[in-house]
Amino acid sequence: MSGNRLVLTANDRPYYFQPVLDSWRTARGFTDWSPTVFLEPSPVRESMARLATSAGIEVHLNTQCRGVLRNPWHALNTAFTDGADFTVLAEDDVLVCDDILDMFTWAAARFADDHVLAVCACSMQPDVDPADTNTVIRHRWFNPLVWGTWTDRWTQVLRDTWDHDYSSGTPHAPQSGWDWNINLRIMNDWSIAGPLASRSTHIGEYGGTHMQPAQFAGSVAPTFRPRRSRAPFVLVTGIR
Image: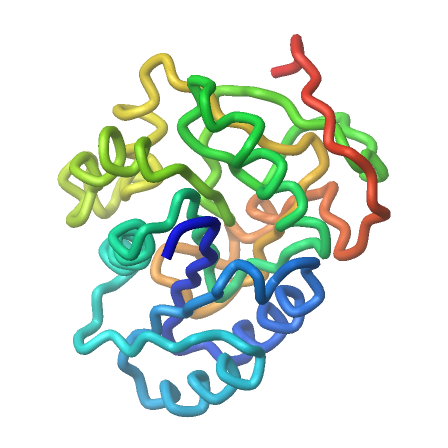
């Protein structure tokens, strides 16, 4: 299956999954991205699968619990193995803006031949007008709260360097896991593209593998808005 794909990872928190699905259903072009959720085994898996199906999402039932390190890799690799050109990875506790797929569609084409490793939807940029609708920048910090990449960058850079077991850090250190591995060891001279005003925000305060309630406020994007007017996206240089 060529073209753009959307994959989501989900486990056992339907109280976050439902509002996240509701936000994705408002995203323009949602069904065009052939969304698939990679759902872990849990006591609430059947009910979560029904939520996904009712939202128009194909359900992939993991035969074993892959966890927060391996399930994202499995979702991305499945999409690219199936022939996707560009794949967006989302999570079950991250809300999105209604124009997020407009942005990814534009960015997937705009940066396909540039030295950009990934397009990240979540922005923690300080001093940004939350009403900014169309400014996109290139910068140097990977944010895992909904992001996308291309098949060549997956197969040549990310797939075989992925941290599946915290071997690039330690489970008890803050700089650990596949996202930190990308930032600290894989980025090198690659850049990241993303909006100044965030297109995603975290809601998973409780029950996550790594998130602690005391850390939650720092994971919420201050410029996130669930609805935005249509406007052409514009790459602005010189902002980091």
